Structure formats: C-alpha cells, structure tokens
Image (cartoon, rainbow, N blue to C red; front, side, top):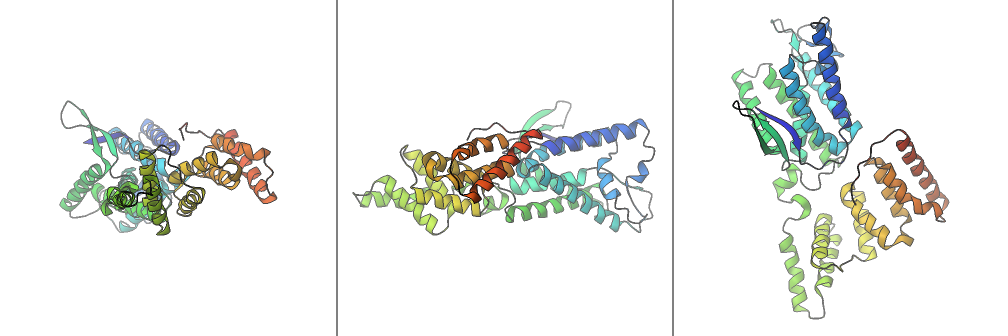
Length: 384
C-alpha cells in the first residue's frame, strides 16, 4: 500500500478546508464509535430503500473502521494540498461536496431496487479518488511523498502523481473487473475518479485554475512550462545578430519577443523574456511591450504569471502605474487572499490625485482588504 503524506506541488492557498474536513471525519468517527454506531443507519448511503438526498452528503463522513478512516485521511490531506492549494478554500469545498453528492446520488439511484444483504456504503474514498484525478490533470509531474507498506519495514518513497494515480486506477479497474463491474468499493472509486477527472478538465479549460503550463495536456503536447523548443526559437535571433553587425543580441531577442506577441504566443514571449534576462542583466522590456504582456496575461486569467510583470511595471514606471496597482491589489485580494500585501500596493495611491472612478475602486479594495484582515485571514509570506 502507498500512503501519501506530502507533495512538492506549488501551494498558493492554505489547506484550510482540507484540515476542517479531516477534523469533521475524525469527530464523526469518534462520536459514532463511542455509541457503537447507534443511529448510523439514518446517515449511511442505504441500498434498496429509495432515494434519500441527505445521505448523499452524510455518508461521506462515516467510515467502516479505524483503518478505513486513517487511509482516507492520508489521501485527503495529500490531494487536498494539491487541489485546495490551487483553487482556494471555497472553490475546493464546492468541488469536494459536488463530487460527493453526485457520486452518491448516482450510486443510490443505481441500487434503488437492490434486495441483497449489503445495507449500503460509507466513506470518503470515492470523492478522494476524484481529488486524485484532479491532481492528475493539474500536476502530473509533481511528486507525492509516500509511506510504502509492503513488509514489516515501511519505506519512504517519492512517486510522481501520474504514476501514483495510474497505479491506483489500474488496481481499482482490475478489482472491479474481477467483481464483474458490480457495485463495490473498486467500482465506486472509479466513478469518483471519473467525476474528478471531468471536473479537473473543465476547470482547467475554463481557466479557473492556473497550472503554469504543467498540466496533463501541456505535457502531452510537449509544451510544458512555456519553454518547449526554446532553443530553436532563439537560434533565429542569434543568427540574426550574427548576420547584422549593427544589431545587438538584446535587440534581436527583443525583436523575437515582439514577433511572438504579434502572433499572440504569450507563453513563448514570456519564455523569451526569461531567456533574455538570464543572458543579460541589463535587459528590460520597453513600456509598451511590458504592458502588452500584462494585458494578455490578465485577459487569459494567468494570475500567477502576470504578477511579477505587474510588480516590474510598478517599480519601473511608478508615475504611470495607478491602474496596474489597482489590478494587482485586486489580484492579491481576490485570487491569493493576501490583504496585507494588497494594502502595501495600494498605499501610494492614497496620496495620489486619482480620477473619481479610480479613487472609488481604491477605497473599495482597501476596505475589502481591511475586512479580510479583521476576519483573521491567514496570509502566506512569500517573496515577490
């Protein structure tokens, strides 16, 4: 058995709801175990007794024994880190409960005429399988630190999420096939996996989550990280610099960046900026090109990628950065839950002579940030 307990995937939000869900599962388990599960039949996902919508939610917080609970909580913690770390608490909670309810509704509906000896099902395994599938779509190359239990000597190993997910999906498929794809734990895990995979793809394609070019589809196309074929892309610039004595390397690279921007190849343009900066400490994007990248990334909702360009713009063009400051403050407040940093960004605007419409936006953002601080919003301390 592989029990995951940590990950190296980028974490942009604290795992608040992940911890809350684990706590709720533990509390429910202790409460029912202390009373020998008296009254639990009202909350399990009952088979052959019609549809009971409340059970579509409650059954996910019941577990059939301590081992079942502990294993599920390991998985919930590890994949909750990845999924909530990219979505934030309220969208993660919506996804978690959505998968849970949909999976249980389908399961109970398929067993409405059941007349066997199994009273029903409990546990969060199916919805956690959905979280695993979402992590597979969003961060396949990141690794899970796992406890490997094969002998009496447990080992610590690191396994990529794609390998981890494939192992468990294949295992569930094999067990489901052995059971003739009748309703059982393996098949229920697979239904949760399918729901999570579809949800992960939808959120990725609608740009509700930023995987920074390391999602499953970017890897499949060989375009991960925006650096694909970077050496080929800049060979042309180097050749142009050699052929034209009057053109410096920096000018050739800038021309290449502008060509990519003209073709709306934003990832390639950003890769070019990084390459140019790594080869010349003096390289700076001109004002219009820098603004074009910022606008393109904002339009594509690439929040993590646009942030350093916005900070650069504010640093280099402080007298022209009022709107960029407002946009950056909104990003920090609404996308990253960093009200303190947002207030720092907004501070110079309090002394600026803003047009009425911009001053109104500034006041609204400042009020929202202060409200988050008063509510005790946790804020990650990261360097820009």
